[in-house]
Image (cartoon, rainbow, N blue to C red; front, side, top):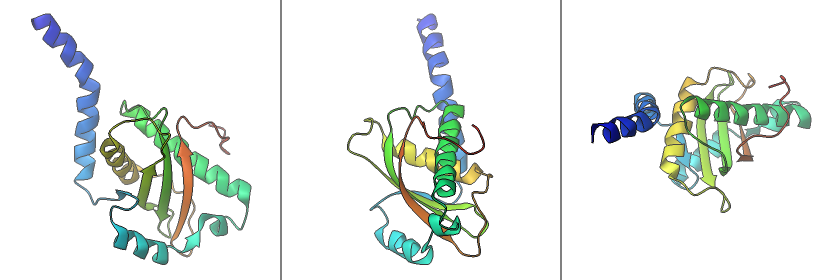
Length: 162
């Protein structure tokens, strides 16, 4: 009986560690939401962050794409660091950045062909990711946003060679 309990506790250790990290970071302000969860907040954000990432990148599609893929890769790396498997997850995402390039909000919704899992955990993971993410995307004079698609694992090119 003790052997079974010991093996079971070894299996759960990475998950309890990840949940502990989630709980600690979720104590901070909530920044990750489902699209449709907070409709009035979402509508206000779309109006307030009306500059698009493409415009911030001086209409350079390659630069915009590289920044988006780099962010998706950073989310993937963060999930792996807390032992959370995003493989097979496909999302629609709207990310809102402040003028310094820091993520203010992430709204997302799973695509119909996404892996079946508890997306509340994905929401918590994205919330924790946004709070710890220190890599600035791109400083700009205005708040900005990007609505896009993401699939994990990330296979796009990343400008910095990752």
